[in-house]
Length: 117
Image 1 (cartoon, one colour):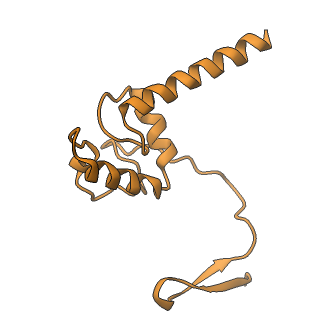
Image 2 (spheres, rainbow, N blue to C red; image 1 turned 45 degrees about the vertical axis):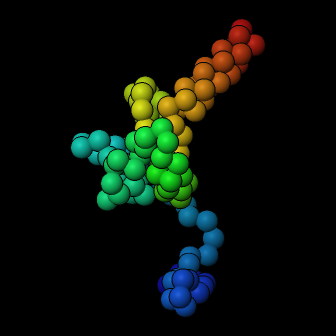
């Protein structure tokens, strides 16, 4: 039997927490055939929230909050950049921020490849 530390969770619930770091295989999260990511925080949330109107600050802020706590945020963002998503919030970034990030990554890769030669 492995050792566990018991910690108090929300509202006094008890959840066992394994000691030490998890070992073994690294699992890659792949998109589902329907286009979703398993374990995404936005599962079951109205998709319109992630495509807010220009003047809808509440929806944009709420979408970013959902993305901030998502376990597959980085994968979602990478897929959106790869697909060139023209609208919406993916991985916590809107289209302008995703384009800027992709451009910074391309420049960094160019500098890295140029200095390695």
